[in-house]
Length: 401
Ligand code: C5P
Image (cartoon, rainbow, N blue to C red; front, top):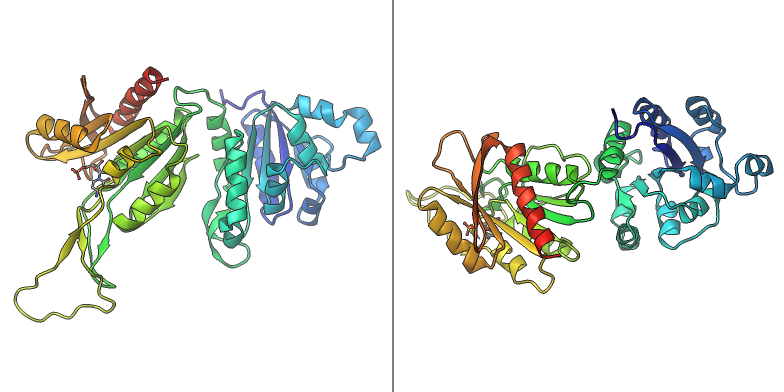
């Protein structure tokens, strides 16, 4: 049975072109077994008519605080109590700002203030509006108050631009809502995961990279979200789909990865560094394509910053810092050395010389070391090994509570 079966969902629809998708969302929520009451802002009516929602939901749509007949049938306070979950989709920039500042100047914002049901929002707006510092500050405020933020996704926008700001698709929203209602072992924890390789550009067409597929980090992000964590995934160049409910930041070079990770660090409970960060980058990236000349080409390389070690000694260090170590020999000895030298809580070592596991494979096996214990995980699917590693992270966080 779906986690949404029997839930009473108050679906807030605010003014954005993505409001047309909210009609399909009503159906999808009903398919999952939920009852849906639609509340529209005044502006939403410019995009979709109330009749559409009314026909789909089988309930009169509410939109005004001053509708006497509707208030007599069910007052806004009763409606706020009726809801077991609130989902605002699409959540426009204006609606998000009003929620962040506690406005109660229309029915939807009043209901959001008056309910004790969990609130989730699905932002939808132009990419520059989404990236605006005021918007991001509002989102942080809402997140800090426990509002779940689903998406937005990257892609083509109705305004003709391409970038982050698209509302998640109805089925993705149903999955996010269902996941966020679960009370897993990592519920209430924030985890930051790095994944994939980094590409260090030599010139506009060439780079130094490595064989990391990103699959282990993506499996960890997906499983952590399924265990209830609020997950941020910083991904190097990989061709993998973003796991449901996970916030993803794409980067290319080690320096960009460092910047993204340090920016996301405040408030995290855990950092898991699965990324195969390049150890060296070209001392300079040529502006033009390099021409071949002599028989031998010597490249000057510089060390990249060790992101993991920096996170582990950062003033805003998460309570649990986990490193990965890909080794071809003396696994335990090298891994324990890294645990100590980088100041980690756990290190997950894999033997990349073993066939069928590790880098490009769907399977993995890990030896995990802490200061005073060791555990063998797998071999098995990366999702299974990820789940086992996250149980160790959950144990660690609980032991430090
Ligand atoms: O020292 P080594 O590269 O083997 O350590 C691997 C671990 O360190 C991984 O968790 C990787 O994400 C992290 N690392 C890093 N920054 C680097 C190099 C490695 O965060 N520049």
